Amino acid sequence: MAVDTTMYVHKSTLGLVKVVCTRAGLKRNRAIVLLLKGAMTDRALKAAIGRAIRYQGRDRKDNWRTVHVRLREDEADYFKDLRNVLKLSVSLILAIAARRYLAELVRKAKQGEKMDNYPFSHYVLSREEQEDGMIFWKICWGFPEHPEHHFRL
Image (cartoon, rainbow, N blue to C red; front, side, top):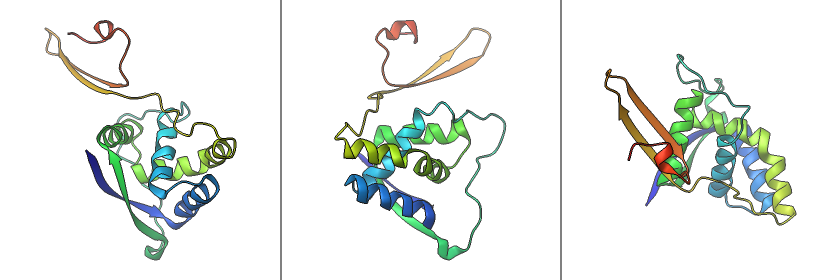
């Protein structure tokens, strides 16, 4: 089932997304999803603890656009997790991704490479409670070959 949502995107970021669409022959929704998926595997984006979600810098109201996006259910969960782990709004993650991965997406499209080399095809959320009262949440983007090594079954 699809999840319909909106993002508040700066015109400059939207311009970069348009470049990806034009040069790679993608629809806007697909380009946005591919850019966000690129951020999921970027080791340079570090997890943040103990701070509020960071949003894009302020600018004049006419420089912002509301963009409608349709995500698969698992993609919506992945991107919410990414937001909470990085402590960045999804719109800010998109802005970063558009600047970092634009050239790579265009290159892959021009060379006929598979655009979505996204390794995650499952989503597992596990809650484990220890005898001492500690609670552990495990979020798994993908499904391990031996789940019994990672989760109590």
